[in-house]
Image: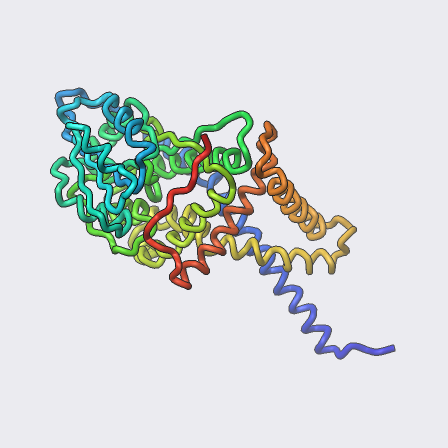
Length: 411
């Protein structure tokens, strides 16, 4: 019989206690990021509603300010006519809506199609330097007090501009984010089903964030700022919409969120296309956290910092790492407890295994049309966090270009 040294046994016990502690910390962070923050946010909003009721007033046509609709586009010839038709049919005085397109680098005739429209101001140059460079180049020519940014491949709700402008009646509002709506079909593939469910949940969180204090960032498909608050953004910026909106918030203004102002677009064509988009967003998220370091100072920015850390920083930096660590942590704890005894740790281990199995089934069914959309939630969740890991390596390797290749959308 071989006796284990006493200090070796103590070390093993101490190590397992430390792993157990890391397990619970990791599990708490994951739970808080994806569920807990939503619950806490809901409670805080409910309390605020009991203490304060916000009055909503609509602007009449006599008090409407002039507005610029700015549409950056790269090789969007397939969408020019439907975007222009949609823009011209918006419920807003035509003489107060200025439409600007900037098509730098487009070589598919996008600019030539736009030249046929008399009510469009077009900026074009042959050299492609990326979306944010195009925006920086054009913004000095915007003369209206409000500028609305919108993507070329999205369609706006008829009254979206009215709803956006109404939010600016509050002098504290410096930016307004519209809602991104994903077209959902009964037989969506994995990308469409997962993306649609994700955006419905995300939109709810944004609505509660704004109601509590401020939304944390704006959706590039549709957002607006007070023109005077725009500051030139670094040329290598990946997430221009996020940086622009949060820097407005850094100035002491709030970002409002109005789901009545919405932009519609189709889901990604498949998970490969969605992963491409998510990796870019993840790389841009890490870049944004580094550039917005002052917002981590909760003593200076208070509630905004709390929302920013809870809603963005954890998702982009910490929680994906915790998900990775939970795999060995739960395995070790389950093995010590008895993997088939179905105690606390072994039960979690098998639930975790089941989730990854469900994600694998989602991958197998990726290109199948199905009505059972719940199958794709674990897959989309897994893919979303995988993109953060891949985005991290792309960011540190400086391999993420500022030029964005649009993901293919389902039809």
